[in-house]
Image 1 (cartoon, protein in one colour):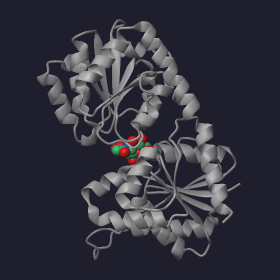
Image 2 (image 1 turned 90 degrees about the horizontal axis):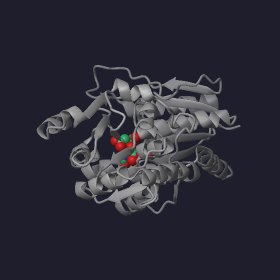
Image 3 (image 1 turned 120 degrees about the vertical axis):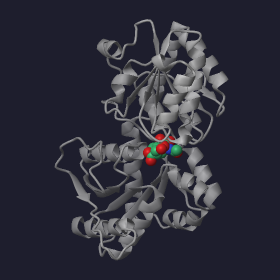
Image 4 (image 1 turned 135 degrees about the vertical axis):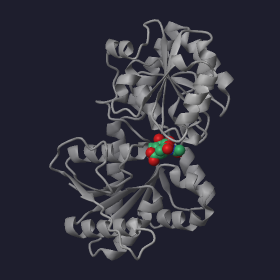
Length: 374
Ligand code: GMT
């Protein structure tokens, strides 16, 4: 049994989901898990006596222009390391969590090993703010072990930061009990989707990098050839422009905006195809969620997406911005029932065989065991 601290962004987002699901699975395997976060991780829905939650509280002192959240986080980490005698502190993101963990390790009396998982946004941040380069590099180099969610992210990190450190690829996973295709005839009815209409789905936080407009342009071309509805799940900065574009194209009656949803597997279960046409994506957890629910995907050739989608077998890859190619693949797939069925089955097989939660959790456990020997 190991005592493992986990820090992540607890709000909706792939990295928070992975960190939380990992914690819950490690607890099921007999470890003691201590989440150290600013609020309760949104996926933390299991009652398990081996799971603890330590909230980072922030006091507002009038002397500080900006509340020192990262220092409060480091302080809480140090407290938990000493009180609980943590073996491992596993942080998600170098910035700021690895930096907080390194500071906490310096402060704490009890020795702890730091594992940092990179999810991609550290590298995206660098694109905007190069002054943070040394800080991110420090977080990576001072961690006892570093993992990244795709080989592409390893290459990008090494290229942009010039780090020598070994970075191990440990892919993302989904909880197979939650992401499974189920029969929901009534959902289609509730959303006004007819039986003979194909359902195309996109799920994201509507940030610019997700290129939601490309999804809409692709759908516009698809719906000119076959009966279909587009379900755009999520919310974020590009939401209003996305709504506007559907009106401009005159397809607003064919596009649904259900907003943020908790049970996306129910919506995936009524979907025939998933589109993720981002310009940056270190992995694309939503693709794996779709594949696990037997939904083939069309994604862009960037970042880790080609490591998830097996082009021509479980989905297709297109260049960023090539909505023509995305629509052509979609029309071909959605017009051929036998092909669609084969792709759906292949998507599920790939999700279960290449990204099995048990395999991934075992890879993290093996890494913890290895660094604890040092
Ligand atoms: O993509 C986002 O906006 C959210 C971000 C996050 O922190 O969850 O996603 C990143 O981590 C996910 C989990 O590893 C990956 O599936 C996403 O591809 C990655 N996003 C980017 O690289 C842009």
